[in-house]
Length: 609
Image (tube, rainbow, N blue to C red):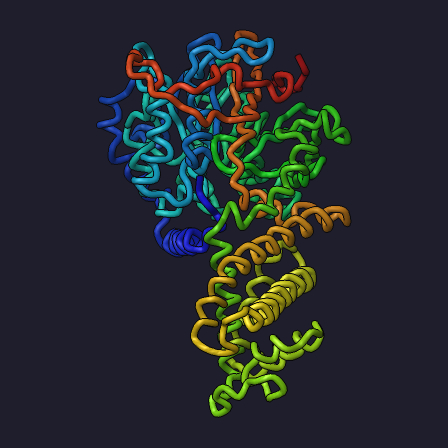
């Protein structure tokens, strides 16, 4: 799995994200796709599998017709291209032709929807092959009869190469194992039985929805011969904007709000179901008046995201008014809240951030390097070469470390380090940069709160660096047989700082994340450093996916499938048939699958089975 606290990984991902945002502002690949789709319409007509229809003569508004069957199964997964064990465990279950979950028998979807972030940490041909195509091909190498179709919406990580790799993989009629890609753009519309529609949108790193994409959905929604009034839309979006409207502000819902207010509802349709990933867990919100569902199911393979900081109610502003969604059936009962993992388990897992230096050794090494650089700069600023080796008992200390070796008072030690920092511009600059970085890192909305949290965090690291310098100085100057000064002190000090600085510095960072998350949560500031507390642990377990069924009665039933523990021991199947998976685990796939909550049935108003 990706080690997100590896400093080099963070730098690479940050650079790619910045470049994709910069170039995306000047060359929107979504607009280029629209031109390509029109130019390729003739070839597309020759390649059609019988599912493609168009709402315009030039083929610029093609959609996919799967409305003929009386019923249809659909699979949904998101945030999937990370570590092999987690990704393949989910893919292995999705590949099962029939899967028993609880008392319910489900079937493999005739359609598989990948809901965003199909690869981590950044998009590239190699990463897609290793982290997505390989595991899914191994799970379902081939299908002898009618193959399931594959549609995908790009998440922010898919956009980090400007969408180049995504378009190559998903919009050129390629195969991913036994699944056949069908779409020709980064967005799509699929007509399901009984006037249900599956829409997937591309919001390109939170940019406005492009005009060709809006025209695409508007042409479908406005044509009564394609979408009769009263059609119901299940919308796949890479981010849960309904949740972000509550946690980040109502502007987070402006893209979905425009689609709902200007395209879906004015044409007599309803946005009955919203599906999203981005947050790597399961959570469901329901509108009490309409039964509309908003579901987060980002459990396809990436590191776990906590559920204990999620708001219990959401208020989403649209042109029609404020829509309210709640966790049901029991928003105040942790054990019954429709989340996975459950809230007590999520809280317990947060303490694993204390293992940060062991799970992220490169991060601990970077912290140790900063401590060592600070010690080097302050020591160098206080060395007095003219004293030579006069640093003897009763003499004048020749450097900061020599002084620290002789003092037994913590206040004096801290004062000496601060005094030395004032006379060492390099050390002072290092402290200032560290302080500014930790203030910016503090996950608080207000600058005042971020300033306090960042300052306390920086002060803790400065205090720890001082304590380590003091402790090493005392120990190294009392080692029997080691000269009071000399070159042997340098490698000894470096080794001590690398080991103890890395461990204690990483532990301090993990402790800060836990305290900020848990203590501030007690005072109403939920969600502080929720992502970092869990990304530091890269927990592979507690995965999930959705299995949807449009029944012959016209209702849409959603089966949320959870996997508490992923498989980690795989064995090769050299004697398997064309459809058989290449690897099998020690536990049958069905034994790992569980129903997170009873199936949810949607027919305009939701009712429990």
